[in-house]
Image (cartoon, rainbow, N blue to C red; front, top):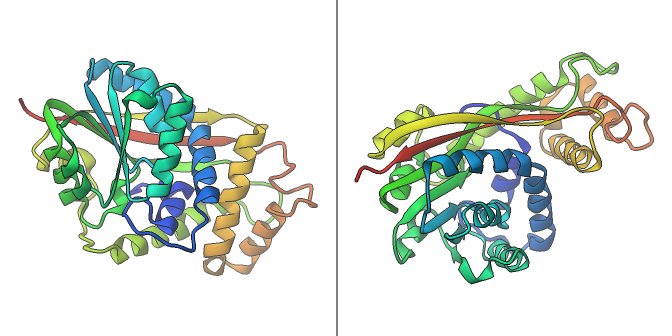
Length: 305
């Protein structure tokens, strides 16, 4: 939520709850999870809006847009807003998240041209009534075991002359200075290294996992598409972070501590504890130097006519 840039917290959400690869866990609090995913996507909305505006210069008047791995549909609804004449289909492995997506589309006045498709990706896309003029996959392909086969499956559901767009890659998110005045400088870089190892393990444990060089333009070309362009989009929220960005940093560091703290040394664990302690003035709850800087890359390719 890579491949390899650096896994971000979005990946951890997606993998833990399995909503991109169709697993269902009756122990999951879907309402809570949907709320977390929605707030996360809403934080990134300025980045997504710029990416969609860029796409709109290439994809003109699409009839059908498919959001593959849509989760609760925040980006799906942005597509409905940017492409006013298009029908939107949100596809995902989680029916409860798709229910949230449909509710969101109705609230935004797009319910009459919004559909959902629940099932394993990419196979469930075979149920589409007609091919997509634009098929979008945002940081979800890396949750499918064979990424090259997944892209080929997506490409097969794109109309001749249509576009497949994948958001994969970019840079590690940053939200603290290198030297934060407590602990050893460079905490985020060390967390990145631990995350990279975790991400590799996650990929190897996926069903049908196949290792491919994660050269996304080359993978799109191998799927029979003509690579057109790649562009990286920034989310730049300078310090002091607002409430939404700060809450996201708290959630990110909490998940890091819960899952990966044992892979960090004792000093870094102690620093994490201080950063997450609301009673500590040095925590991310209070520090004025918390910011949010993320870079995500979109790769597009066109199916030959």
